[in-house]
Image (tube, rainbow, N blue to C red):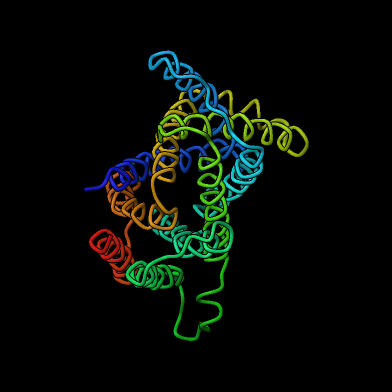
Length: 302
């Protein structure tokens, strides 16, 4: 199995843990902005220490990078903040499994953004896998409390699907931004390129979130710090997950990475059932199975 596949599965697992912690913070203590900020505040210093330690241990020098690096990284950082906020808000609309599944619209959207921005096309098998997964997302967007009289428009275009599609779109832009940034770094070491990109991005995200919360929700900064016991865990899982994603983006087309990353839904389903004691409908289970099938099609075809 290719390294990028293994790294993508690891990243998906860590991301699932991080969203579990953020769901807890959102439901008990923090606003959407605060739960989003908790991810970046405690991960940024950890990432900086990790990158410095790696440079020291390997004896490598900080690699050179072009001015385009900053554009890609800054756009990726801001769009990831928006996407994360959409997912956190989505948890208030649907259960944990469905919330994460709706976010997976990012796969097809990442493919489209990647083609438009980086000119990276997807193979026929990749398109088939992505379409199968997208059908699963449509099934999952259907509200659980609908009646027979509920219109198709209301069933597909509701607050939950809106948050899900918005998060998918912005996660797609962030993935392409991060891949574009990593490709601007002059190094053959994919891990070093991932660390350099991640160090800059997380520092930038903390600055953006500090300005935002200070301007519109100042008291929330203090509340995030007060939840440090859980928020530190959010930071650690965020750091490990992001390192996995950034490394995978360095090695492979971002759309393929995101497609394999849908394995997160398996972890999510288990967490929803065993941790949050939430139940999924038969339709939701079918939607999740379609997403898993799309991953298998993609992995086998590459």
